[in-house]
Length: 223
Ligand SMILES: *Cc1c(COP(=O)(O)O)cnc(C)c1O
Image (cartoon, rainbow, N blue to C red):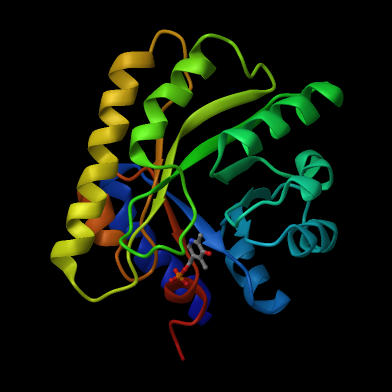
């Protein structure tokens, strides 16, 4: 078995009990490695740059569900929308509105997650936790018909302090539960928490993650 297929099998065993799904982060990977994951059955892949996602979508099999996980500039939205199955990284009301309007313009609805700033680092993108419920309220009132809000996404601090990371996952998970309780009637698709990467996904699963985004543990496990 090739190293990527072997890593995929190990990861699936960890994900299976929870039902969480793997988002294979293919940025910086060779086509050969991406195809190893595809041939082992992986169908969700993610990129953090629009041009790269569009280029890969052309090169790879058509049944791949491409997700976008990077900071998205408004001027790239138009190119991205027809290619993407889920945008994890909607980090402002302005971006949400832009995606909504562009989606209606091309006669579609776009699945998105709201990215919440849960890390201590200042430079990371995301809505403040206090902004999330009010913005979901506007979604629930039908202000953004071009989007279908699928849930929340968060990235933890880049640190080795598991206590800190645990706390960040907990806060996102609590916000998610609160939002779901409040909006389950009006936002029936609100069901995903995208949290956990290669270094912290086991902890993320314990806090109820439904989508883990993993690159290095899947593709570089033999390095
Ligand atoms: C690169 C990236 C990942 C994957 O990181 P790994 O540590 O390689 O698993 C996950 N999420 C986002 C937003 C990323 O940019």
